[in-house]
Amino acid sequence: MSKQPSRSHLFLQHLSPQARCYAEVPGLEALLDSWLSIARQAWPDVMLPEEDFLRHVATRLSPSDEPAATLAALPVADLYLACACARGLPTAHAALERQLLPRVASALTRVRGGGLDTAEVLQQLRQRLLVPQGGAEPRIAEYQGTGPLAAWLRAAVVRTAFNLQRAEGRRARAEEDAEAEGSAWVERGADVELDYLRRRHQQDFREALAGALASLSPRERTVLRLHVVEGVSLERIGAMYQTHKSTVSRWISQTRQTVLEGARERLAERLQLSADELRSLMRVVHSQLDVSLLGLLREPG
Image (tube, rainbow, N blue to C red; front, side):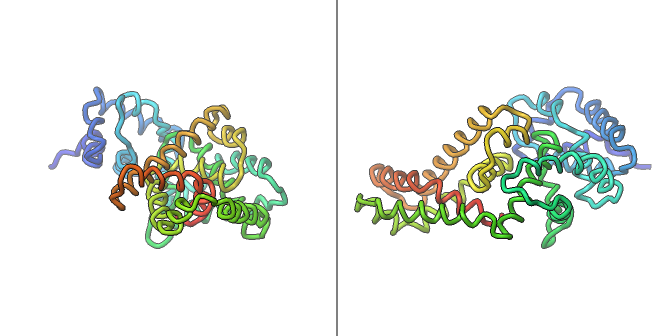
């Protein structure tokens, strides 16, 4: 009779090469045992195969300077439920419906504009998170455990509400203001060199910024989209992530800088410019950043 592989073996074989630091965590087998115990105690009706759960967590881990602390801090019960929902287990969907969706629905009271049908928003959220699209996993599989699942769901329900508002034309004024800002920038473009660079390299700018945005973490993209596109206040975003608005402000500032640096690297590699030419290009990118982000973050994906 073949020996059943240990949980640590199942877990380690699914780590990415960049996340091999977790292989050296002391007492890994006992830690994984505790994960399964905690998760099944939290969701006793959800019978998720342990290999599915361990694979799910392992494939979502990022490199860490403190791997033991990172593993110890994971919200394993939340990850277990998200994994089970992604696998389509009816008991997991029922637990999500019973335990979490009523709590996250309260976030809709803070959405600007009002007039929202809570039942419609929640139905759209279920469709968005639990139904596979185009052969991909359901979107709830994107939850990585960097914070509580309830906070992640609150952000998702707010995004869903704003999407519905836009579809109904309630955000037409914000779009008009963004277009007016872009036109005003062109009218103010007295600097002939910058205007020339802007027109010549518009597609390069767009692709460099899109690549920089794609390299952000899910949380960075979500917070940036909520603030730049949806106009959600720092206080409200802080409430979603259970942190202070000053922390959210710092996140946004750091993310904008990361996007600019990523765009600069991509432009330098793509266009092979001199240092002076690259500085001039980055002046254009910086001057258009908010308008560019508004357009790129609106696009699906």
